[in-house]
Length: 349
Image 1 (tube, rainbow, N blue to C red):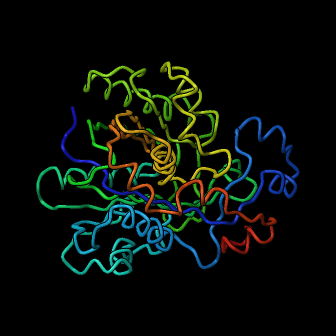
Image 2 (cartoon, rainbow, N blue to C red):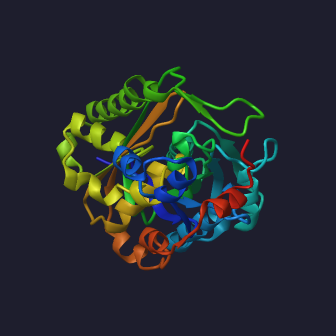
């Protein structure tokens, strides 16, 4: 069933700072209980002053390398997907390569496609190995997402990263297939030199998120001949808590299938790493021979869908990494809004 290529190691990173919905609502005079009920988000992760997309990507990649048990020099490509690269002109990917001591014999690129840039990189890294161009690839989704002060996005836009090493030997999860569904649906955007993104409010739902998530899922099921009930774990992109639950209901996904990868209530929407962090969380709990479905979504718009089969190697390899998703989730310290603004480095405008 599988393609003979897959994930040989994965890792994540979540900043320890958290801010609660109540704290943001206090500043803007919002109804915290109504907001939490409406978004199904209770708090979010916030990067510190000394953290950015590059540092987050490096930390996640180090955990992936530790799990894979390979030398960094074996990596043939580095792709970093993000909406918040620290430089407009200067790749994040080469910073990661230098920090990991990969050497110079690798290809690198920064990717942008809203919240699905990380999965776009994963598709590329899997394809390179499958085609025989390299033994191992590295794909990372990382972001320090921001919402305009007082905007609804401020309650969910969060920071975090997830990294995946692709290869053929020692797979923890083998790729069954992957597909994409894309269209020019501008529900969310940010023009050059603007600090904060704009969004089409309710337009982001039916014609954007739901159309692409559902269409990509159905396309993958058709391609593989699998049924949605065949999957033990299902992860959809989580801009909030309500959207993935509604998508699951439309597609006939049961609650037990989404529990392991449902991370947004206590992490927030980490943009390019959101669905990939859910994937990490599910892999941390998955058993050999289980099937995992992951479907990302990026505004503009597109979804990447993947079907993976968990392999026996996951049991031994998971034990190599202390800092797994649950470790980062439980490592937290709460900050107030003034500290949040200082850490994000943005003045209210």
